[in-house]
Amino acid sequence: MRIKLFLGVLALAVLPSAVLLAQQDLSTHFLRHTWQANRTNPAFFPEYEMVIGLPGVYNSLWVENLTYNTLFVEDGNGNRVLNVDQAILGMEDRNAIRENLDIETLSLGARFGPLGLSISHTFRFNAFMDYPKTLPQLIWQGNAQFIGEEIEFAPDIDVLGYQEFAVGAMVEVSDAVVIGGRAKLLSGAGSINSSRNQLRLRTDSEVYQLTLNADYQVNSASSLTYDGFDDIQTNFDFGTFSAESLFTGNTGFAFDLGAHVKLGKLELAASVLDIGGIDWDEEVNNYSLNGTYEYEGLDFAQRIFDDSTSFGSVLDTLETVYEIEEGSEGFRTTLPTRFYLSATLRLRENWTVGGLIFSESYRGNTYPAAALSSNLQVLPFLNVGGIYSWRNNRFDNLGLNATLKAGPVQLLAATDNILTVFQPKDSNASHLRLGLNLLFAPRESEMKDAGPKWF
Image 1: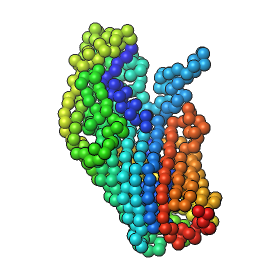
Image 2: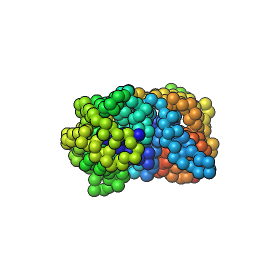
Image 3: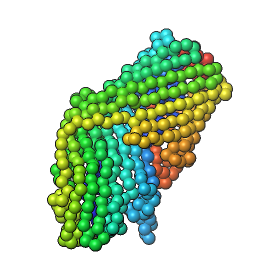
Image 4: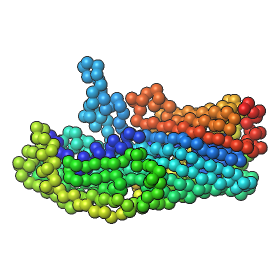
């Protein structure tokens, strides 16, 4: 028995965009000797007169309450087969999928005495979906289990891609205090966003009357086309990022602020990132369901509940009952705003430890995290570190990072969850940052800290 309404189909259309490519970048904040740390606090600046950031990537994926081994199980012949019913058993009342991908193309930083200036360009992609367990239950198991009940099944969706052009500055107010800021011009490439999120379905236990109470709207910019229940198309990939579309009619602004205090061997830092959003006014489509929809009749109920009925005929029937309203009104998306509060202590000249409290404000919710870190300058050209964090209500997050420097070239690799490498099929999160920098003209403090130079 199956019922697949508009949002069920939409969920399946959006979900692949989210998982092909959540969030909380913790390791990078402690890598103060790298240019990438500046992305977590604009007051951070490596101890060099000039820095060039070459192409790099940051990616983070989180799929709550779902792993490969819960979705695919072994059959009697030892083959892996899809078992959606088992996966649903492991879900909570609410579940989330989160993906962040940053492709850092080029950046430049330069010091002029106590003043540091920077410019950068980044492709950024963010995908978020928060859905109730009842949504996959309806899609895959049907609504017979909910006869006589009213259930909520609306997903909250936010998928967007944009280009970020940033200009930043930091100032050494004194030997102990540094403040920084960054202004960002945002050029939107595409968005799929749900702005109203209420869908409640009731199936009468006697006459199989369906009642849908709806107040749901999906906004799209250059990403989603709806021409009927059986013709929903998405056009959301990085092919939309091209030199010809550096600037679009969908624009916005955001700001970063940060401070860094040095108290001898103890350093304190605080920052807030991505204060702002994007206004989508170009190639906009709105699709909404609003009101109470009812349908009575045994023939219709049998068509919905009969497994032998083709899905196409069900869609044709649903389209005559549930009217999707279309519009072209512009909308606004707010970026996930992140907060960092940290302390680091230099135990020895080549050894630092630190602690971090992190919070992200997004879609009306707060996502906290906390971390402990340690970094060791093993050799003049090699720095290694580890991080242990609490995030997504889990305590099994162990990360590693390393930087290698050869002459002016600095390579960076970091992950907040190394266990994914060893247990990928049992993990629901992954995290990776890769960076490449050119560092020129070290300051006296950097030369003193690093000791004798091998390169």
